[in-house]
Length: 341
Ligand code: Q9C
Ligand code: ZN
Image 1 (tube, rainbow, N blue to C red):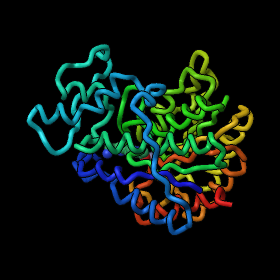
Image 2 (cartoon, rainbow, N blue to C red):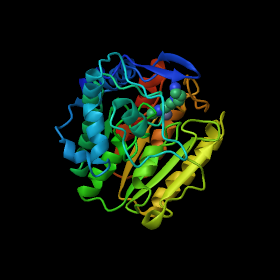
Image 3 (cartoon, rainbow, N blue to C red):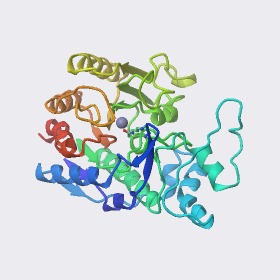
Image 4 (cartoon, rainbow, N blue to C red):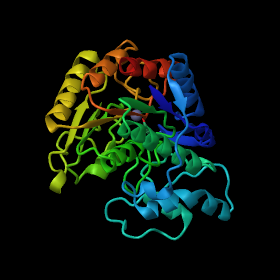
């Protein structure tokens, strides 16, 4: 399978995140993408470079002011006399103003971010833009006739909403892939998110749309990040009512219960009549993941891939989370196996 990848991911690194009340080096590291790239090259997949999609190609999914914030944030931070990494520390909660963006960089950061775990560094924009281009390129390849393609995106994307960033995500790579498929001939796109964390950004982007069915299997937000979205009673609104399906599961869920939810998800995508599939492929459901709590053994990832492939749809796989760096590459390669045939 074609693996779309850019070395520009390396420009995003060096930040710290607030994790359980401590500042720790980000779990979302360069080593993640390097490990995946090596494992996929070893498995015989063909690495290809992304195409040069322009900033305008983001605007079907993201607000223009948000994109402009991300593009210029680091320069504004430097003008403020700062270095290192950017983290917000104040957010507009209930009763406060979300309708205006504070003029200064600190307030603007709090306006667009929703956590203090997603630092911006000097190269974040270049890396996020390259990841978005990887996802759109993989989608273009599939629109042009490839049966499946994989975007090795770093930073990941599924927590990024129309105008918000967080959860290590800046631009929503999977949403951009789905949007591109829609613009190039697909009528109904199924978007299945199997990352351990709810894809709140993707849900936000497609909430009122019926041309993309968003289905997510994830740790229950009652105890798991992102806490404030991803409950089973969220089903979409307006034209999008009934086109969001959340399947939250408790911590410690193992393969048997997981596989049942997966069947429900795949059945929903089949019943919808999707003509293409985008998978937000997080492998932080792995039992060894340092920040997640499902119990899927490594042997489950080929099984996951086989079930996805059995939908028999043109498929774009987009890398999301997965933080057990040592096993990350082989787990991703496991999912891709069934598509290689
Ligand atoms: N340190 C993805 O898997 N952690 N994102 C919350 C802050 C955020 C995970 C506590 C986890 C985000 C793409
Ligand atoms: Zn995740």
